[in-house]
View 1 (spheres, rainbow, N blue to C red):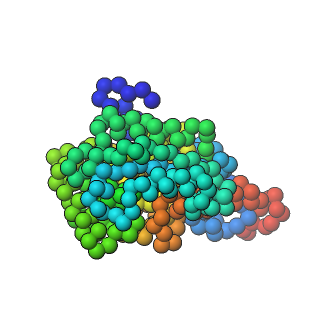
View 2: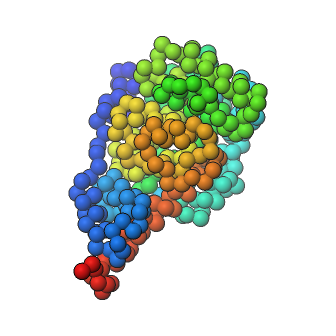
Length: 338
C-alpha cells in the first residue's frame, strides 16, 4: 500500500472502514446445517466455526489452502537481562524453522498446512522500550505494510505466529498500556524468566510505561513505542486478511497483543479472527477475556511459533469438512424429525 501524509494516516483510515461479514453466505450456511444428518447443535462449536468461515469468506465453508505465517523480530529491551536466552536464538530458531526441525514444522506436516517465515531485520533490534520508542512511525507503518504481504500467493485460512526473544515483555507492556492494572498482572515467565530475571522483566515494563506515559492514549502510538517488528507485521497481516476475506487464527500472547491494538482502534477489527488456544503465559487468558473471545484449545502450551493456531487449524478444517461433506437427510434417506 502507498503511504501518504503521516505514515499512520492510511492505516487509521483502513481500520475505520473495514468490510463486514457476508450475511447471505451466513444464511446459506445455517440453512444447509439445518438439513444435515445430525440434530441441530450436535456438533457444538464446529457448527459455529463453519458459520464463521462462511460469513468471513463469503462462500460455503471450506479450507483448501491454509497457511501458517511466522514473523520473527529482535528487541533492544533484552539488554536488561530479562530472559535466559540471548537474542541470537531468534535467528537460530528461524533457521530451525527453515530446516524443518521445529514443533511448528511437525504440526504443519500433520495437518497439511503451508508455512512461511518472515525475518524482520533480526540484525537490527528495535529500540529499548525502557528508554526510547521501539520504532519510528515511518518504520512501524512500513513494517505493518510488509506484514500485509504475508497473504500474497493466496490462502483461505491464515494462522499467525511469531518468534522473538524478549517479546513476551513487549506483549506485557502493550497490554498494560491498553488495559491498565499492574505490571505484575501482565508479565509472565516467557521462555523461562524466573527469580531475578522476572523481577527485571517487571521493572523494565514499569519503566517503559513511565517513559512513554504521555503518548499512550493512541493504540498505534502504543504499537510503535512499545511494540516490535513482528507485532507490527502481524497487525498488518490481520488487516490484509480482513480486506481479502480470509479468516484468521491467532496464536498466543504476543500475537494477541497485535490483535488487541487493532480492536482498541475499531471494536470490530478482529471479528474475522478466532483465538487458536490459550497459552500458559498468565497474561494471555486475561487478554483473551478483554477481547471477548473464547479459545478453541487449552493445552497448557507456551511455545509460540504459531503452534497453538496451527493445531486449531485442524479443528477448523474438520468443521468445514463436516459442513460440506455430510449428507443431508434427503440425500442419505434418513428420516428427519416428525
